[in-house]
Image (tube, rainbow, N blue to C red):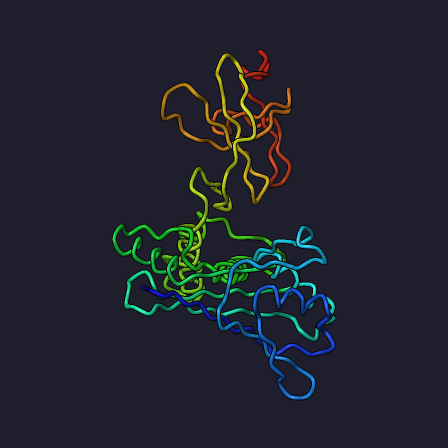
Length: 290
């Protein structure tokens, strides 16, 4: 007969004053042992970990079945009532077997805070690594916790003191420069390429390289169109559906009717400093055509 065994420990030791009688009932329901750790703390462990428990009532019909989620919610209550003294609790578990069966070994960990419960398992982690090695597909489970820091570095390298951001096309050109500023631009460009490969697939903004989202469809001058908006800046784009692989083009607003029109086919109505106002074919009159 093959015996499977799972054991768990909890860290850190918990101050005694944080544990109520109701907490102890939960621990008993999951066969969690309590051992004194000094005069004012207790250490929790389970020599035979079970994933479910029963909170006994005065009558058997009043018994309450508990899941691991109920236990983790109880630990969250302990963390909250600690008022910052106990910011987290972790559970680390091992799985072993009386015979050397390939499915009889492993481990898992649970990290509990006041607002979140995170779980990891050695088997699922190894399955993901095997998938990556066999297919070359770096899936969404790959650790990408470094991305927020990379985004901050990228923003610092591409934003001046006035808060103006360098657009992606200019950055690409600057990255080819051999000066000191060019070297910084080269680093920023490499970071951009790493970040970009992790972002959502689909059309991208030419100004900031952010993701474009289809906001609506309409028809102008008999042509069906898709209107895209950048998720990171205020740029808009148009795809005129005249063929299967219609290009995505930058959009501006027509001063005549307020419709979004393709910038490359629009005319400048008037210009003030660096800001231009455009008018499209939809609102051209004979005076403008002349």
